[in-house]
Image 1 (cartoon, one colour):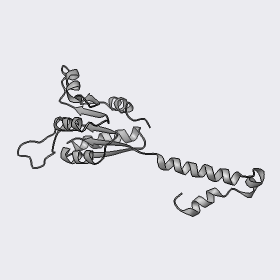
Image 2: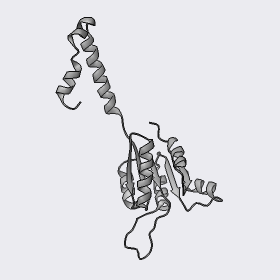
Image 3: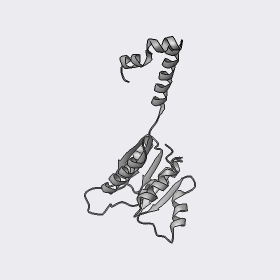
Image 4: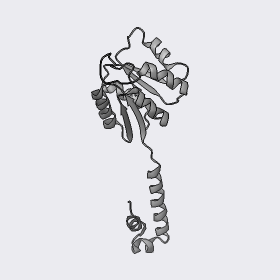
Length: 178
């Protein structure tokens, strides 16, 4: 219902309705107005996802959109560009990797990695949850690594790659309440 004529059609009850229930036009108009106001207030759940692997960004994005409706995902392969976006606006959830493929002699740069990003987020004192997906986590040091990455201020969860779709959904369900 984008133009006024559409709105006017909904607001006009039939004469039979008006005869059967005096004031129905006023009640119906109020209901339509309330419904339109509610739909405008629905806000998308915003996720920022950082990973140097473009296929992983795409696959995780597809899995999230298939399961959770009303989610917007901003993806970044470059950690520096992601940091600029995080300074501009806080997401509802951040998903990041710890390492990137910045190899000496390689022409492309992926900017800062998760190890560099997390202390900046702690310094910024962010309140949104952070999900770290990484293949560089050893099972032995998992709990230590969780405490180390979270620091004093961050809400960090870790998932060791490779992950299953069920593991991803279970972790996201803790944060996405749609």
